[in-house]
Image (cartoon, rainbow, N blue to C red; front, side, top):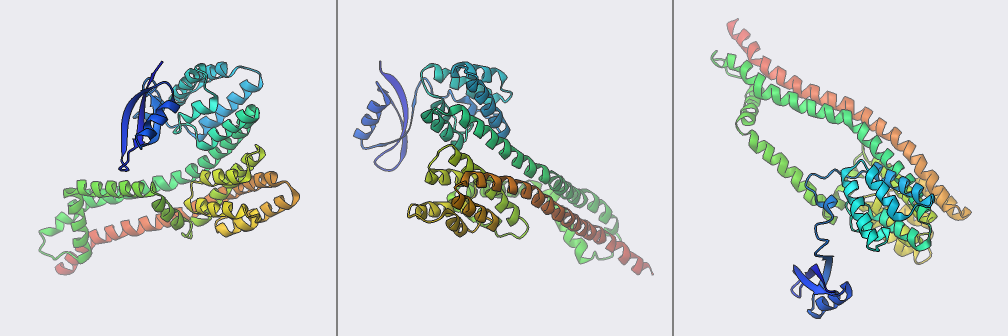
Length: 405
């Protein structure tokens, strides 16, 4: 029976086009497309198009590392107890609190009923399940070690969630202080200053230069506020677009690793994620080259990814991993030393895990130190700005007193 497929393909002119075909199988469809001189990019059945609502819902709830950790833990527990995969998915669908994950698991259950394996159903939802997880699940299916792989990934994402929580928790107070400072300054410029300075305009005394400057800023905020909002939104949009490109991401990652205050915590975050992921992959039997590539991408740092890409080329020539990691220029000397010890003792996975735990603890201290430096700096800046505004409002009063005298 012929199926209807929707295919995105690259035509002979290099443009991406979308066509609909009828074919008995995907292999037959691919032959049809290539016979036209086109290259297939994405193929999906017409009946399945739009099924992955968890990925495309406009207001979907994001699946966090905590949700993934719980998913892996519950799946491991049920499979270890001997429950069939389909039954385990049905239980997870009923228990999932995240609506996006619930919808995704429901779709996975339907695909498993049709004969697909777990990793294939997970790959249909790349915005829900990270590539690292789907790759590990596929490896577990091939080796018959799926329940142990899921247990390792549960531990991995639990620790990843702990790191994310530490970072977000530490940034809450500075973020609130920043919003408060901006709100106070705008309120003083747009509301208080015009009312206060308006009392002196009829006195005939020339307003001082600082006062005139702030009056101009105040008038601009009140009359052209929408332009300010548009400019800020445009800058944010532009930065987000740039960071989605490889070159833009590389530029900002290099910038973060060169800034005195944040380069330490950024390097520690990358080190913790890299070492833990690499340890998990090696313990699961993943080849060293593939493990390094996957671990580097988990860091989400282009400098690390570029460095590891070079490392993998050199490892193929038989070079030592610890020596090559030093060339990346991001990882701390202690981590490189621990990798060297692990290579010599034959316990690389264990040393990587210990390094990850160590830098988790160091990261918390580094974040607290960073916050303790940011808070007084922000308070000083806020005080200087507000003090300048207050002095500018008071200067006309001093000039009036001098005129009266």
